[in-house]
Amino acid sequence: MVVTGTRAVMGSNQNESERALLDQDPAGAERKPQPAPQVSVLWYALRGRPWRTLALVAPGNASRAWRLAQEFRAAEGDPRSTVQVVNALNATVGRVAAVAHALSAKKLESAPGRPRFIVAVDSPLENPVAIGLLSVCDAVVLLLERRRTRIPDAKQILELVGPERFIGAVLGPG
Image 1 (cartoon, rainbow, N blue to C red):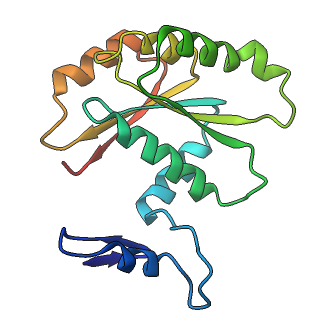
Image 2 (cartoon, one colour; image 1 turned 90 degrees about the vertical axis):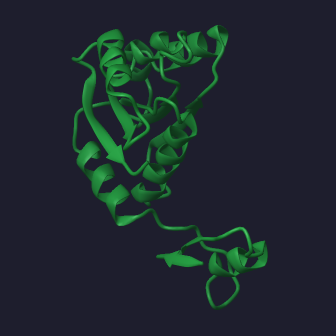
């Protein structure tokens, strides 16, 4: 077992009770795992940019986008924060339309407290209806995996969504 911060990476021979013990403080109260330092650094770099809706797209591994969205929310730390996460993975046409409407600039202008939304979105190459949602987001970050994400796929996503929406790409281990 490898422990990093409050997280544990376990082999198949470890039992779940060890993981539960790692997620508790000495008094026995459960605590939320802290995001990795790299995630916090990335979050604060993105947080300083002018966006209200940030889409995370991970071609070939959509669940990675959802995990990172949740880690960004955890990195924010403040329970009164107006940052909210939205899971739009495997979305149908109706779900994409509803989320896109809720996140439209017109709707957000009238929202109290200037909320910000982090949206985990499928790759438009895997779920073409995702283009409708990506087109309403202010900013898009592409999550690439070393030795897994194909460069032509990343370029095609960039072309489909429009380079003006992209504020960066993150290369993670594969």
